[in-house]
Image (cartoon, rainbow, N blue to C red; front, side, top):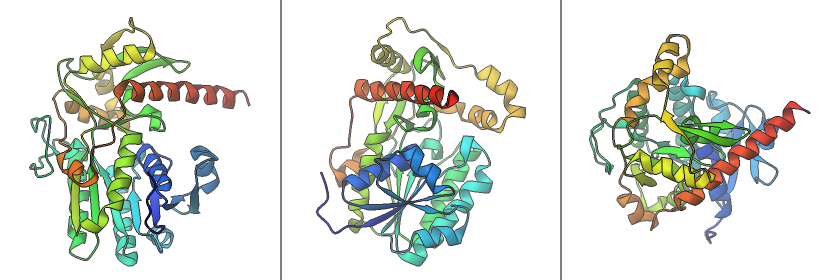
Length: 335
């Protein structure tokens, strides 16, 4: 459905990523004008595709003046930019958010910030409410709590923000396929195996990016009902057992015999001293050793029933994206 309200402007930071890209598209479909900041606008536009109606602006999320200039006249800033490969969160993620807060303070725009389950302890449960105590188990979790604290503190200075927390991202447009990407092996884009990162009897929360982007856009249009700092949880696809995901991937791939093994945590641990991405990933392994999920009740009370693509269709679109991306890589290699 397209909004009938006057055209509003959103600045999306991280528009070539999964959450940023899908939120941008959902906003455009609802009649918003979307800008995006990129160090190389031409490359970003090519990555997003010719049908993406985004106004690309040259700039860097690490430069406060660039963010403030791009946010001029905007009603919303979607802060969906993250350090690549889990690297240097302290040195990059916190300054980028500080720049967004400064831009929002200068322009009056609301901030929409994608959160996750890093804030919560491993025993927080399968339906964590927004009011649950936050006891992060990792360094990145502590940084996430700190970043949300920055937004909460900014509310006292008139900066309005909404945090939308979700489980593991997956879907078309996600970097390397999101969570499904690193939990599977592929050849020429087709699945060859599944690598379970934790016990098969643990619950698992997945957030399909097109659904999450639509939920974010609906929240953006409900912003007149909010004041200050707000948090919402996106329930997404909750699987009672990781075995359910294995069964769904076998069905979606048409491979009932698709082999399933264990994710090589021992190898990741051995390589961690030499690779920051592996070191950070290894620290997060607790997420798949426990059943950690989010309650979507508060979100549904504001935007109505949560956008929800059936899991078989969502996985099918994700697998098709794997094959398309592999085909583009082969064409580029032979160009």
